[in-house]
Each structure stands twice: as structure tokens, then as C-alpha cells.
Length: 493
Length: 109
Image 1 (cartoon, one colour):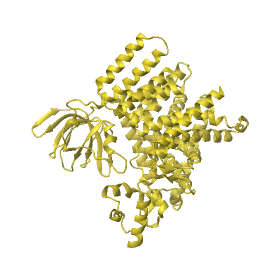
Image 2: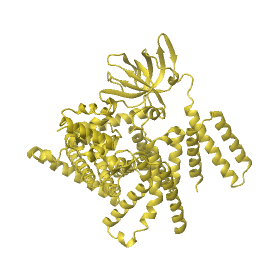
Image 3: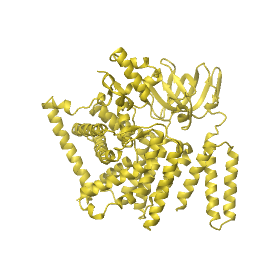
Image 4: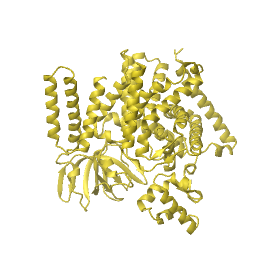
């Protein structure tokens, strides 16, 4: 096993352990230093590797404890008062409107309560009912009511969900309340540039498409799902195809391909093409909000492109581990997010089981392109399903027998829509006179895409709602699955 | 000329087909108005008609279990078809917060 895989697994284990147990930061820091010191003392294997792993385990625990340790001036330490407060800060996210409320994240700089002014830190979620015209990077002065998030409904804990993103307070700014822009361009210039591109693309979709296709392309290309009707996201969820409207490695792969083709046509040299593509993927990652699946995909795509650049082979498990470690170093809480878990679970499952499932089919069946395409899509769909089935059943209580077949059709379809949607976005910005034609065909593709979903949903017993499952069931499933994987691999060797 | 691979040529061919298809569709939409309804999408296509739904289709909605689905159907049986969506909030088990979550899944006809 590659050292990087072990270190990432140990780091992740440390974060999970710290998340479920209570001890202070100093304990985990001390433990990691002791293990590291011992590792240098005992340089003989296997002690050295074991001590390095324990050191990384303690580092993971320290990373989470450090994140949970809030500075004295953190806004979360302020007791929510019934009176209104003044908050000065910089807009950290791309504001969006939902149900006539402008929502964005604000990085707090100062807070005034009554006559007292405090220098403060941390981020808050702002809900502006006056829907001011704010953008990323604006320094604002707001007046509103500060409160703790309320827990959500059923088993979704909204407060916990926000806390894991570092948000401990919500500021509600009523209509007519003071909300002023003090200065602009205070954000990261690269992120500002990315968001400008995003708004340009969103403008193309809004101006040339009707409401639902525009919402679909906003989700598929730009990662904005708030305009999608709830019934539609429910349909995707029930069929197990919700991942196609989440920006993921698949989208990043397609976009890398498009960028490389364009750069090839305009005769950019090969090595420069790879570097430019990595840079543009970074822009795309920022543009779509840098969610864990996109960050994972961007890191892995960059690793692959750098490998081509320096003419080295790529190990998918190593690049996956690197991506996971990079995300968790930045925010250890991500390991508790469903998007992080599903993203890596599906990728590892495909990497592990795709070759095993494909080996079932004799090579003579792959004579025609169509047969090869059908077999490859089936193997990828089945491999992913094997890995995420118990997770989906446990977390979302859905079982969808039709999901493998649905994904075999829907996933390639979504690839076509991503290519055509991306083309519409580029053409809309640079060659607007061609937008109309591309918009019409995009509408048709999306119509067919959604009708296909409806067809699958109409199949009898396409999906089932499940009762709450005991925790041991998915644990047992994964234990058996992992055991089978190692047994099959040893048998193959 | 550009030394493109097979996949790259297929991608460019696909984009050309997309462009030509779009031009044809635009022509049809402008000259044959009836064709507009064939290639248009409405949000209601993906919502459930509350007055026409059975227990299974109600239970397909996230947040609606068996008991709530039965209560919705019982309410409809007792009071007739829903005239407004906000009547859902009168049903036991549907709080104001839950109603906000559920209303996006339904329409009335």
C-alpha cells in the first residue's frame, strides 16, 4: 500500500475519532509530537510506519480540535441579544436570492452591540430581506438580529450542518434596515474573476433559455441548484441519478477535455496546453463554489495532467488520497459532509470494482464500439452502485433497483448536455449571434433528458422508501465488500 | 490539419450537429407555432398534482411517509379537492416549516 494512502487514512481516522470523543487540543498535539519523535528513534520497519501512521492519526485529531477551538473574539462567543447589532465585514460567497431573501456568507471584522464596539472574527450567514445589491468582495456595514441557527426538520440538523462549515450565527437584516456598501474589491482577485465568468454564463442561460432548462444548466455547469424545482431534485434522488446535477469529477473531466480540444485547435503547444488547462480548472473550481467533489476532481485532474506533462504514470488511489488530504487539511469537518463521503466512496468503488466487473465479460463481446460502450457504462454504473448502495439506503432510506440501468442511459446523456451547455455558455459570451441556435438545441436535449427520467420513474417498483436501517447493516456490508475485494485481487494475482 | 484524435473529432462533429439542430428548431418554432409546445418544458411537469395523486405518488415525495400520505388522502376525502396549496398546512403533521419544504413538490389542477 502506498504511504500516502496510509497517511490519508490515518489522518481521516484521527478526525473521526476527535469528532466522537472529548479531549483537549494539547493532548492530541502532544501525542502527535511523541509519535513523530518515536518514529525517528525507531527507524526500523514496521515500527517506523506504524508510528508515522499514529502521528498522522494524532495530527488529524489535532486539526479538528484546532478548528473547533474558537478564538476569544470569534462572533460565535457573542451571546445573541434581542436587540439589533451592527456588523462590519466582507462578503465571502456569491450572494443568491431564495424566496425573496438575499443570502450570503460574511467574514466578520467588527461587531457593535449597544455602545460597545468589538474587533471580531469568524463567518456568519446573512439573510437580507431588503435584498441589497451586494457582490463577492464587498465590505458591508449591516444592522440586524444575530441568532443561533435552529435545528432543521426530521433528522436533518441544520445547526450542525452550518457549524461544520464554520458558521455559528445567522444575521437577519430586515427590509428597511441599515445595509451599506463601504468599499468594493476586497475579496480574492482570482475568485472575483471566476465569479464574473460565472455571472456571464448564467446571464447567457437566463437570456436564451426558458426557466427550467436555464435552471438545469445552472446546476450542471455552474453548480447552482437553488432554481431547480423540488419535484425534479426529488425525481433524481429517487432514481439514484442526483449525482449528475452535482458538479463532480465527471463534469471536470468533460471540461478538461473541451479546454484541451480548444487549445489544440488554436495551436497551443502540448505542454503549455496542460498548464493552461490546470489553471482554467482552478478558475472553474472557484466559479462553482469549490465544493468537495469539485475540489477532489480538480486536484485529481491536475495530478493527471501534471503526470502527462512530466510523462509519469498515475496511480488513481494515490491521487485520490492526495485530494482527500488536501481537502481535509483545509477543513477537517468536510469528512462529516455527505458530499465528501459520497464523492470519495463512489470514486474508490469504481476504481476497485470496475476492473473486477469488467473481467466477467469475455473480450470477444467488445468487438463493436456499441457493445464496448454498453459494457463500459454498465461496469462503471454497477461499480459505483456497489459502493454507495448501503450509504444511500442508510442515509436517505431509498433503494432504487432501476438505478444501474438509469445511470447507463442518464450519465452519457448528461455528458452530452454538459458539452452542449458549456458550448452555449462560451458562444453566448464570445459569439452571441450564434446563441439562438445552440439555445434551442440545448432546450431539446434537456427536454429529452428529463423525459427519460420520467420514463424510468414510471417503471413499476423503480424505487422504494425504506424504514430506518440499523447501523450494523452498512458496516457488515462494507466489511464483506472489502473482504471480497482483497480476496478477488489475491485470486487474480 | 489540427491533428485531432477520434474523440476530439467526434466532439466537434457533435457540436456542429447541435448548432444545425438548433437552427432547424428555431425555424420550426417561428414558422409552426404548434411545435413550441412539443419542445417546451414547464415546471409543473415535475410536480405532483395534489388532487390527482395516490398514496404511492405522495410517498415518493421526500418528507411524506405512509401516515402523512394517508392523512392527506383522508383530508381530501373529507373536504373534497384542494383549492389552495396552503390547505396542506391544516393537515396534522404538517407544520408551517414542513409546509414550506413540501409545497414545491405539488401543484393543483
